[in-house]
Amino acid sequence: MASDINLRYSDKELAGFKVLILDKIEKAKHDLELIKSAYMNDHNNGTDDTSPTFKAFDEGSETMSKESNSALAIRQEKFIRDLKSALIRIESKTYGICRVTGKLINPKRLELVPHATLSIEAKNMQ
Image (cartoon, rainbow, N blue to C red; front, top):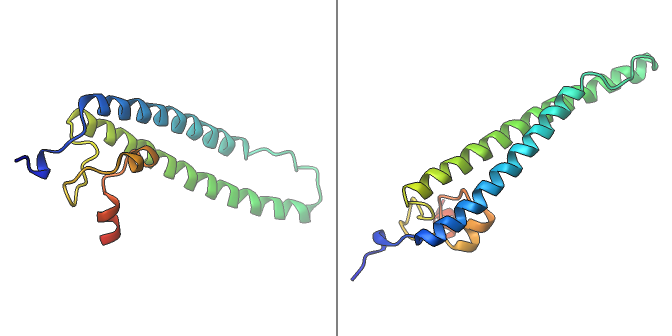
């Protein structure tokens, strides 16, 4: 009788997840570039000749915009790292195995959150 520990996704299923993850990495990298270019373009938004009052408001919103862009970029970089870690788990054939229960993570969950390392069961225990 096979134990739960020996359960894993088949090579064919892992290959399918790999395609999904590689696609998500490409999209995430593209989004990161957009975030970074928006951040770079924030430096000059053509308000130099407007009234001083408006300029003060504009500089405040520019600072907030830079902070939110920076936070977005950091989150996007972490997402890319998590996806790359998922690729490593695919290579080692441990992808899709919950790190708490040792059971397979539902494939629907992995389609939505391909870098997941916890099953819904384990997530609910937290």
